[in-house]
Length: 268
Ligand SMILES: N[C@@H](CCC[C@H](N)C(=O)O)C(=O)O
Image (cartoon, rainbow, N blue to C red; front, side, top):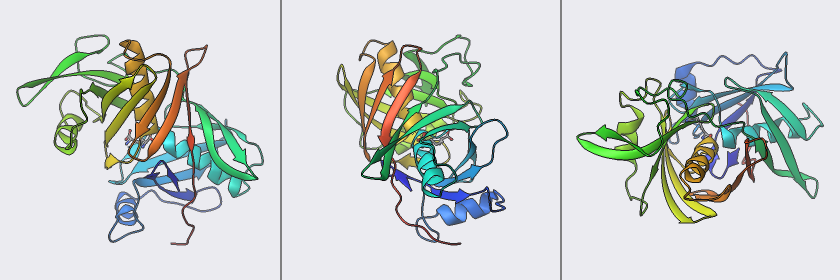
């Protein structure tokens, strides 16, 4: 399934016994020797919520949240008749996430997700810094200062505003991802502000490299843009794979709306 081209292999871990073996996840995620995906996402039972989401990057590392993935996982649960409710509460390795599925002509085409409140405290992101928060501040990479904003959306992000989108995001993305500032690595977003309601973003994801889109990254970028007054609180985020509409609601929760699509189904 894919959400804006951010594709994962979705597995039912309710009726099947799945072992989240790192090598197996890496192998099936491989685009040449496997199925090909940005990683694997599993639907599990939960004692406290409707379902539990587990998500793994293509290198087999486990992430705590996935914005594009949770829309697809909700569609997966509905389409496979694990629920007939379009309002679904997920337990994740970070916090509760609530998904409202969108139905058009009897098909689930996407969802709006309550992505919770963004976290700015560096100790909780986690980021090594003496500052309590890190908003438009410099980190130093290979002797060069790079301004950015650190935000957690249940997973860590470092948002960098650029005047023009760079052609190569891999070199810098990888260096920041693995720099000593971020003890658990970080997802890196490059953001170009188009106007007060529209930003463009490319992402270097920890554990997966450049992907076509990142839901949590888009929310972190929207929040960093809003916080630094580059945009308002309703923003369209254009990614390589398409657009997400993101806004802050009255409780200061980030709401993200976007598509969810099944590509094919099979058996391994
Ligand atoms: N693509 C995802 C985020 C996936 C997890 C991330 N790479 C991490 O390890 O934190 C999204 O849509 O949010």
